[in-house]
Amino acid sequence: MAKTYKNIVILTGAGISAESGLATFRSENGLWNNHKVEDVATIEAYWKNPDYVHDFYNQMRPELMVAKPNKAHLALTELQDKYPSKINIITQNVDTLHEKAGNKNVWHIHGQINQIVCMNCGHVFETWGDISSEDVCPQCGIAAMLKPNIVFFGENLLYMDKVEKLLQTCDLFISVGTSGVVYPAAGFVQVAKFAGADTIEVNLEETSNNYLFDRHIYGKAGEVLPHLVQELIKQKEEA
Ligand code: OAD
Image (cartoon, rainbow, N blue to C red; front, side, top):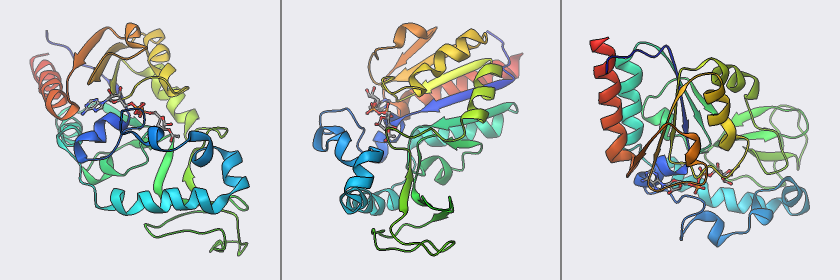
């Protein structure tokens, strides 16, 4: 069917990075099966034991620094190159594989592993190195206030004003590789649907909120997303 979308929003989760060798959160060997969320990903844990939290993200950084984008990320690059509409990517992932693949308009609502934020002055800076509670903010000079710029449970998501506007004006919403259990991201499909968007879910398996999507494509993102991208490009060319 020939169809042209004007404003596409793509929500991504850990599943899109799985074929790059990165662990998802809730799979058998997932990060949350080996660590307690409340020990490493809550704002209370950070204030209680900052160095324990720093260690967790310090250990993660080298792996994410060298990780390479896979066919799913590259398919999104092709979509953005060949489908001249507004295409925004809202990611829950803290890795930088979208950027490494050349994706544009990427909104890291859960933050980025290679960014640090000062809890005193709000300064954000980039590093792939280790951080400890003794480090000093390069902007305000205060020690013991640096935190990975990752949104912990108990904190507000980033870029939400922008994201709300994107969701309320999109005509196609595609979710890729997310289990749909962490809100508010799990509810984005409802906002898009309410705005009249077509909704497509791309995931390895059925998710708990799959009933909210018009269409489901099950399989590895690196295998099925390139086909969806070709289908969209073809539909646009024929429209
Ligand atoms: P999850 O680990 O909850 O879900 C990953 C989803 O990807 C699952 O539904 C898998 O079936 C699917 N999946 C796995 N491999 C795949 C593949 N090759 N292709 C397609 N799908 C695949 O991860 P998220 O939904 O991203 O938050 O988790 C959401 C948030 O929970 C994370 O951003 C993180 C976590 O707490 C923070 O750290 C703030």
